[in-house]
Image 1 (cartoon, rainbow, N blue to C red):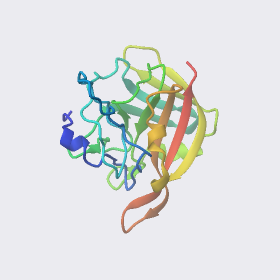
Image 2 (image 1 turned 30 degrees about the horizontal axis):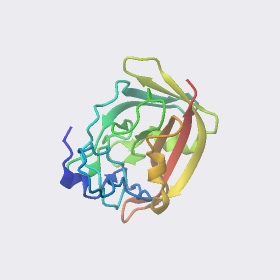
Image 3 (image 1 turned 90 degrees about the vertical axis):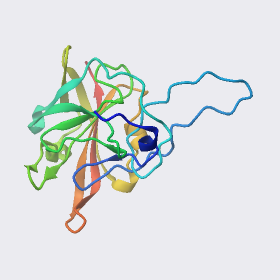
Image 4 (image 1 turned 135 degrees about the horizontal axis):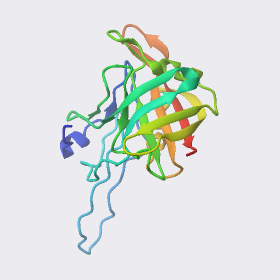
Length: 214
């Protein structure tokens, strides 16, 4: 995994899906207010996946979580995908598996064992090389549907779908979806909407939010 430098973290942080991207959160991570009293340095927060905004935070200082997700399953929609940890490339873009059959877990956010915050997973919806991916069926998942996440060194974690939402690329609430506080939840993201064959881009992101039930 390429270590993130301050220069890369200050660049535009992008989540690269097939022909789609995530727009910016409403605000940055911020810095301590000026003070006349010398203060001991504090660790910078982990980067927040976003698009088209400067990122103030620098390299994350926390170690990856112990309960690393290894698989995500939505039996009702025939979705069964291996999951791999992903971070941020040296050019400021979030890493994502090339094959749409594999999901990436944003390892600088919460993990399935966390008691708060949102576990974010994303995958390409399709590929010219590999074809249609399992998350192409995400839009058909009904509220209440169970999602099961297998983890290393622990029991599977179960979630119940609360919502399936189409967000225009310019209106995706990234700061909310990547929250590290609040109710423990799972967020699945892929592309959707209309496809522009000239620019090879999708108009929307399809987002499933599921709350933890066990």
